[in-house]
Image (cartoon, rainbow, N blue to C red; front, side):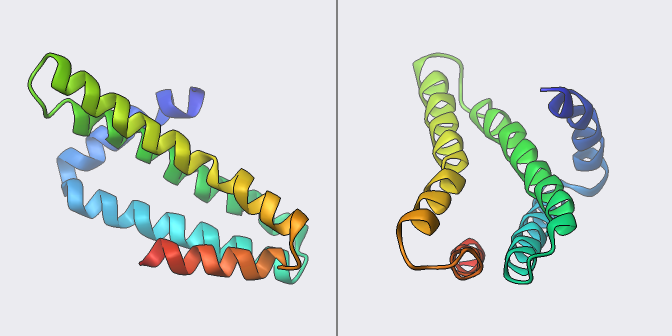
Length: 126
């Protein structure tokens, strides 16, 4: 919550200055870089690399949360706006559970975390 309070005005200023598509592309790159770091740090067992990894992925998550509400506000007031915001929040929450599912797959299958992280990065880029 604190990170969102800090990033909200900064993201608003960045969007006003550079435009939405530029900020979204940067956010996409930051998220992909976080997943690359996750793959490298888990395959080479570099523990200190997990800190920047989770910072990058956390940044992407916070910005995504900010964009879901803003996208919902484009709809006219009433039930349609409420439904869109609820649906977008549900998709965001489902995306947040992805990491729990990845952990479950690693713990209960013979796949390694680097392999799963690399597969997730490939899906992310698609």
